[in-house]
Each structure stands twice: as C-alpha cells, then as structure tokens.
Length: 124
Image (cartoon, rainbow, N blue to C red; front, side, top):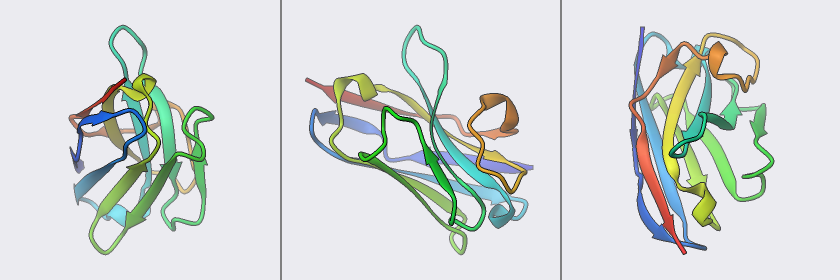
C-alpha cells in the first residue's frame, strides 16, 4: 500500500505561482511513477503531469506545458508540482497519484493510489 498526502494548495491571483507537494508513505516510493491530476467542478478528473521513477522521463498536458514543472525527491518520498503563470482555468482540486509501473502514464485508470486532494483557486 502507498499513502499519499498533498499539501500547498490555496488562493492565488492570476499570474501568480503555487507549489504543491505530495508526501508518500508505505512501499518503496522510488519504484512508482507519480502523477498529478486535477478536477474542476462539474468536470472529469484530468491529467496534468507525470514523472517516472528515475525522474528522467516526464510528460505534461498541453494546457500546462511551459508553466508547470513536476519533480520528485526519492530520498524524501515526495513529489512536487511547481505551478507558475497560473490562470483562472487552473482552478481545481489537485490530486497526486502513484502507479506501479516504470512508464510515464496519463490515464487515471492506471494509477492505483490517490491522495485526498488539495484545492487550488486562481482569481482573475
């Protein structure tokens, strides 16, 4: 089992920045691909970013490419999401997730472990 706890959400003005973190406990964190997803009210959960176990392979949704950066520190069992140039349409609950695979994956169905989510609100 892997337990995930997100932190760092909040309210920010458009153009601002926020940094999210996700602390993992349980089985060996470094063996998991880690992903960030988000869900806005009335919408389906969507992929944001993912990073494989080594950190050498990443993938971003087109909507956040160039603005968001995913990173991980396997020694601290933590994955991060740095969000810059935030837009009102980035407002959502952000979830981190873990998948027992070496590949970078984007489907919610392939992630077996989820955090409880953290709210990010971007005001215009």
